[in-house]
Length: 320
Image (cartoon, rainbow, N blue to C red; front, side, top):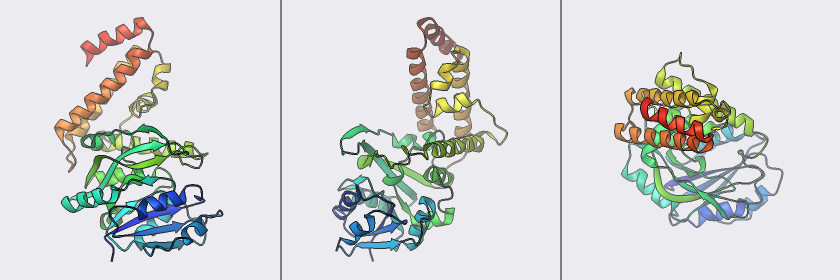
């Protein structure tokens, strides 16, 4: 019996599928099963999988297209191991990925999920940018955005099943991570272990982008209410600012609104600090909040007209 199940959903992924499969089969940690679930592909995806003779590959075909959430839950149920590594059919796992994540999960049995840093690549495979999350800030940052890349994670099947598995059709990973973070330790390794590919079929670039964005927004609002209370209300432009979309707040052209937004961030931070949690680290939460405020302040002081930027600096100096 293998030590790890690599779960790879596939839907019309012929363009990059072989590269993704090869990146798993060529891992330095080889004691694995590659569970590929084809979700009703109409291209050559199935033929590509069937062309491999490696007995570690296990192909399951859905009778009809079920969608990503149902397919992932099916894969979790079918996995023969407790440790499951997620993998997408257009990404590349670097050779040491599974070994490093396996060793971490063995060393820290209290951790239910470990992700990694990623490099985002173009369709052609060139690196566009590197993601640089600070692992110690993951718990705080999850309040405002999905701070863990879905195809970078390894998690424990038993805990995922006990938590109710994936539930939403969009932003299914973000919702699950937030649920897990309420009760279990999460971690992100500092190494770049995955190349995350941007392509024309990605959720982030296709016609479903609006639905995904709305689901993510709904999760952020749910997070804020979890920490501050169910009656909590906040301006839309503030929420967008917290998720690094500054345009709505900038369009208001109001120094007072920016100062109020940063004060609201302080209020949320205090609520996060006050909430008992296995991931709570008071020092790191304060550090993460300070960095977030600095990032927001820097943006607006460089985007506002000079006279308003000076006023903002003055107000921030004496208001926060």
